[in-house]
Every structure is written in C-alpha cells, then in structure tokens.
Length: 317
Image (cartoon, rainbow, N blue to C red; front, side, top):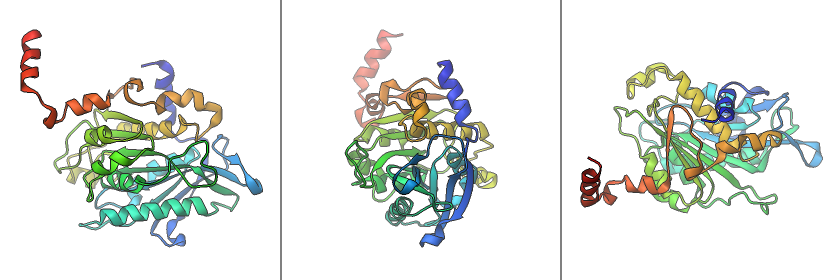
C-alpha cells in the first residue's frame, strides 16, 4: 500500500479539526440525533449566500433492533471532519418497516438540506448530500437513493445525492439488491470478512447490481454486528468482539470516500482522491480486499460453471 494512503487512513480514523455539537433531531419532528461541526480549522465549510457557511450532509441509518446512539463515536468522528450528520431513531422494533425507514431517511435528508444548524450560521450544501447505513440501515439507504437526482455540475439549488455508503448491508423488503440496479449515485460497499451467527445480507450482490460507479471492499476482520458500539449486543448477535481497529478503519473509509470527492476539504481533495475510486482502481489497504463487478458476478452460484472449474483445476494442478 502506498505510504500516502496508509497515512490518510490513519489520520481519518482519528477525530478531525472541528468541534462537534450534538442536537436533537426531534426538534424537526423526527426522533434521532444531529451532529454538527462547529469552530474548526478544516476546509469543509464554504461561504455562500447571506454569508452562511455550508458543509456536506450525511444521513446515517442504524442496524436492526438498535438505536442511533449505538454509533455515537462514529457519528461524532464524521462531524469532527466537517460533515453534518443526521441519524433518525425510528424502526427500532423487532419487525421494522424497511420502506417506512427509507421514508424517514428521505425526511432526514430534507431536514438537513432545509434548516440552519448550530448557531444559525451553518447550512448543509444541497449538492453535497450522502446516505450511509449499517446492516438493515444500509439496505434502507439504498431504497432511499432510488429516484434521487445525482449531484452534477448543473445541479444548482436542487438537492441532489453525491454518494451512498453501505456498511455490511442486510436484506430488505422491498429488495435493496433490485433497488441498486437503478441507483446512479457513486457507492462504497463494505463487506464483512467474518460471518455472524445471524443471517445478514450479500454485500457482493449489492455492489455487482449497482448501476452507478461502485467500490467494493471486504473488511477482513470485520463481522456483521461489529460496527455498532455496544459490546453486549455484539456478543449476542454474531459473536463480534471489540473491533475498535476495524471501526476506525471503516470510519476512515467513509470519510475518505466523501473527502476524495472534494466534499470535505477542497484544499486536500487531490490527496484524498485515491479513497474515492471504483472497481479495479481501488487502492490496496491493509486489512481489506477488493473485487471488481465482474469478479463479484463470477462468484455467484448462478454463474458457476463446473466444466470451467474442472478445466482450471487440471491446468493448475
């Protein structure tokens, strides 16, 4: 791995240059939390009309049977790099409504793009909006992304989606895998290298089906329940332990994906660009492996060719 990428991952896994203020999303009519970057030396803020500072915005969706508070350290870390984060705390029951959760994520995007943050001097840039989620929340984020316009040079004042980050996505109803076929926004899809005891989803299929540019990365020491922070829940759902290093890595990859698009700090956008690449252009990063869309498709059971496998085994024995 190139030394500069290694250093970037280490830097982005730590808190960034902004102080963070935590607020209540319920003030806007939806249960949850809001994390707002304030008083920092980073370059995420851009002065726009009425001399207000605009920052990128991200809506984060929680996993099954868990609240937004289970990601407090992660969400605070994202905000410390200049990203305003909204985390709705809905559909936490045993039988969640995935379509309803996706609607709540849509509402959260609308709230982020339409309200003043902090002391009123900060707003979210409507062309720097991102969706992210873990497990069930990742699948719901994909459902939300369908039909949303993608950020482009001509987006103007129309709210548009700049990217989607899916961490260990789970199955949803309707299918997030089918929804991925129509999502044109760039995506980062992270897969768990270690299986859990509870059936989850298929990150490889999600990435292979993605219509827009996609980067697939397997977190070799990650387990499906390992990204959330409550230890007792992780032990109960899949035997995940203290995955602090893995959590730091995933936080760095999320921030790097956004920063590499120039959304966090235009002064360092070029340095972060390797973390916003797709397919075969993804850089090597310790503790992860990558696969192209074609490699993912070829790994699916429906594309298995026993004759080809036998021939390959004979040629390489």
